[in-house]
Amino acid sequence: MGKLIGILFSLVIVAAVAAGAGWFWINSSFTADGPATTDGKPRVVMIERGSTTQAIATKLKEVGAIADDGLFRLALRVREILGDKPVMKAGEYEIVSGASMEAIVKELSDGKALQYAVIVPEGLTSQMILSLLVDREWKATGGAQHTYRLAGPVPAVPAEGVLLPGDYAVTRGDTVESVINRMIKAQQDLLAELWPNRQPGLPVRTPEEAVNLASIVENETGVPHERPQVASLFINRLNKPMRLQSDPTIVYGITRGVPLGHGLRVSEIAQKTEWNTYQIDGLPKTPICNPGRESIKAVLNPAQTNYIYFVADGSGGHAFAETLGEHNANVSKWREIEKQRDAKQPAAVQGAKPKP
Image (cartoon, rainbow, N blue to C red; front, side, top):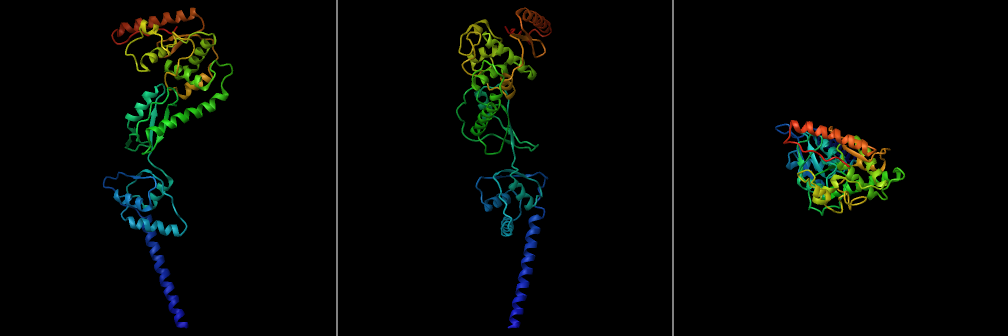
């Protein structure tokens, strides 16, 4: 009996040693450097949503990130038995040359997928933004040399003014519609934040009216620090009441925001549309573009001024005035700037119409 017990004990020791050696080999393989690329560049692998461990291992083997998919699965299984079960996430990953299986699992578990920067400028119409999202190839962030064109069918053009321009990070598989929805929600969230803290006494009664006016401010100035002054001027006009008389509203009424390709004509200024604020009182029928965060903020918390006139000042900005006399003097200065500029390049530049 004692001899049998000794034999069994010896078998247990052998099994333990063998198991220990096996684990040491598996762990060493798991933490060792993986296959290197000939050019030193990283490999890119796309892990689909809902992929099994086997499917992930197969993908990694196919791109050459691991040498043995069976060993990869075995190592994960052993770690699971020992209480370490990583959850690898879907996404597009850049696997550096020579990365160990351990490093790959950590990257996939951390969800450090490649991201692409979708950059939407302020002041575009909804149709322009939709076309931009559909047509553009977006570059990966972080210096990775990859591009991505948003997936999915083309949705309907969103209502004018409901999108918040800005920078949006997307991953491969994101759709045009998903980005549109994010832009809509981003504006809703911004309005929910800013509307309760708006300046009292504003002539805009709803967040939608605030966006409408902000769209005019957005298209009237390309100088960021002017937005609060331009917003103040239009609010002062609304409070008088006085027509807004904004040139971009004329253009929107004619082309829905597409540049005319020429200076405004007298006939176009006189053309009555539901957006032409030379011909209608108050705000246009809808916003004329999708304003950015700063223009919306400017409308809800404008500068405190008595401005009701402005005209270009020759530097890209505007000269503001409280009285018609001051405004006429500013217009005269602008006309002189125009004459000097046109004398230098008469065929290249057309005069700009002063703001009334």
